[in-house]
Image 1 (cartoon, one colour):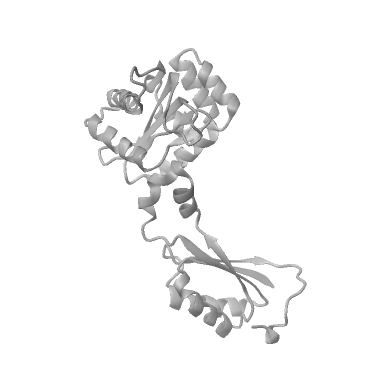
Image 2 (tube, one colour):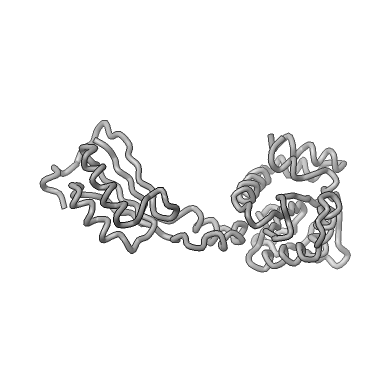
Length: 154
Length: 115
């Protein structure tokens, strides 16, 4: 099991979510809440603030409808990942102006920058594969989505 | 004969380092402007912008000095002199030095004519 797969439990995969106001922050908040439930994160508000602070620094969009918002936060002990498939796609302020359909949120403690960097790079590499993105967009269940990630992450 | 590569992280030491090269017997070298992968990723690739704070203390640009050296004694002398100038290369942020065997070369200037 690869580093991404084991940090992304199926319960933290939100399929076809949407925000009525079409805003980025509510989606991130839902992902943080999913992480908080599974991992027992105490201060979800602080984590959302840390992520949004990073979002203001520069875009975390990879292009081709994918975004990987991420942050280091003093409230975390481990690096964890959540994912959302957005339907309809949402404006994430991507440099290529493409609306985003796949969001992978990664958060970790400040003292694990190297691990964070490795996982971020790997995630970006996996998402460059158009066929893989297509499969993620078609996955019918959280488990199927999770299995696709795990197979690719081996 | 070896190719000696030295990535000097702190450009401020370049002049002293080149003096050490000459003193050690390396009288010809090529100096390249170079930059660390960390600087490029954090400043040029938006996805990695959040890692800028981990770059503190790292020099964004560096110099890479390449030279062909004919014997190991010269490299040993140079290594000692370089350590005195930039500090032990095992300390992070000082530099990286390594050699590669050269089995053929053309166009090298005889050592006593270089500079």
